[in-house]
Amino acid sequence: MITVREATGNDNVAVAQVHVRSWQVAYRGLIADNYLDQLTVEERAARYTFGTSDASSPTTVVVVDDGRVLGFAIFGPAREVDPPDTGEIFALYVDPDFWRQGLGTTLITVASNRLRAKSISKVLLWVLEGNDRATRFYESQGWMADGLRRQIDVWGVTVNELRYSRLLTNGGQ
Image 1 (cartoon, rainbow, N blue to C red):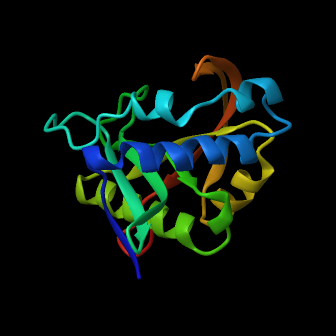
Image 2 (cartoon, helix red, strand yellow; image 1 turned 60 degrees about the vertical axis):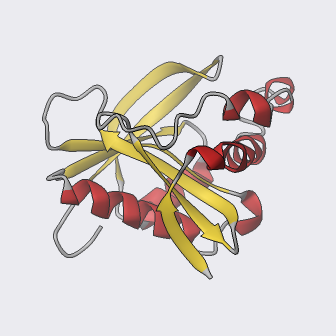
């Protein structure tokens, strides 16, 4: 049975497994193979701070089936935008073995609903340029590229990203 819950400190390794595996599959051909091949679960797991009591920290939710973490989303107030009613989805990844099974939709819906509950009316996210699978997914969920681009260092590699945004409505995401 699929459930969604907040991540705890016990989820670090499981989330890191999804994170690393997703990068290695989704970004192959977009980021250098030698870089992707050297990513480790241990290094990534050491960076997470799930279960913190700091209210300003982003929230991480995991989608779980029979105790196994299959995906996760990290979200909170937008980092680089002034309006207080703007949120951001910082990460959304599903294990590649479970792509196209509705788990990404579940995660983005939960994140959107939680942000809306905090009076967030607009949400942003950034997508690796060239990641056509992700852009098709987000566009199918009503997200639109808003024309902003950036170059940023993520995990020690410089990438180009496109910004997507979406207004949250009371009845939908």
